[in-house]
Length: 329
Ligand code: ASP
Image 1 (cartoon, rainbow, N blue to C red):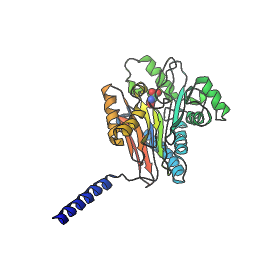
Image 2: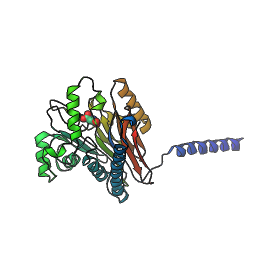
Image 3: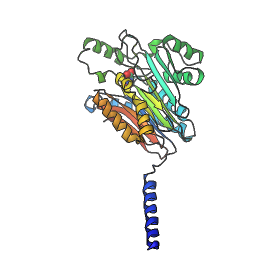
Image 4: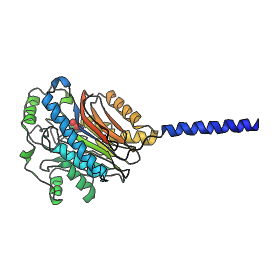
């Protein structure tokens, strides 16, 4: 009888340990996600040519990030360089091709966060820094602050040796015409038509997570309006213990819900998986009629790219060579 009890006990231990092991997620060497903004992105409004251009830029940004990470580079470098590709392209609302403010200017916001030590940097309302994500990184690494704004942020970027451009560099006819359209039909425009942003999250071979976001903000913005993109915890967050997140679309809602940090907090305090935490946050966004999406990676390199808008330009790549790109929900 004693032997039978012992056997039963051993069997129970064996089954419990099998169950625990089968739950252990696979840890990837590295992984990276990018986005190029969420909103009313519908197949019926897209030309084959534009679709091709967007896929090809997403591909370029993924490839650059992939080569940094494959060669043992840091998640921060991968985030910064992938975002440069998107900032330099007129296809997205960040850097070249940023949307216009009500007074016909481009005011750019960006932020970056390093999950290893929770250091972070951001700039808001800059109008002459070619790549705002690099200015955000300089703020994080070479200043005692987290967020610099306007002229002061530009002055700092200049001192740091970053590329400064005439504000006409950001002009694109498409965004200018869009401002005129919005000015004439302001009341009828859907809020989710007025946005766009770029972002990247990465996990490197050392297990470090980073997140970055860069944007022109909201078309027709007034009074120095700043969205969620340069706000750590709202539009961007990274913590090696949990996840990295970059958000896009209607920034006011992302600030009100502190979405990026909320995802990380639900994982940390409620022991939720990334999938559960991101579903919960989409639910909260729906409850207050907010619109938008985000890309995120957990510490194992598992992605979650979710939105409640009809589309979000997005892509994922990992150390196993798996690559995905999507435009629509
Ligand atoms: N979230 C950005 C903002 O509100 C815009 C966007 O992501 O589309 O400024």
